[in-house]
Length: 94
Image (cartoon, rainbow, N blue to C red; front, side, top):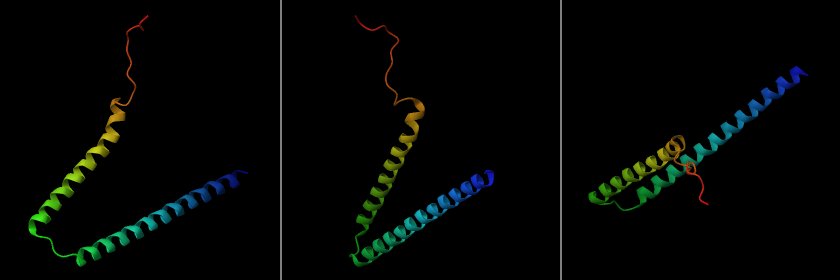
């Protein structure tokens, strides 16, 4: 009975590990496909003037900063208690 349980645990771990590799492989394939598509569109498009490249770079940096800030807030606020309901020590009104 004990060996059957150990075998089951090993098999569950192996299946879980295979699923992780499968998901990672699919995501990597999607990433490669997306990069290939973006590069092909980029090469087919006419070149942009220098000021357009500068504006695009600044916009990309601002979007990354905003995204990182929002992700930081997701992890910061639950630890500081900002998401909890308000409480009061005053007795209720009659």
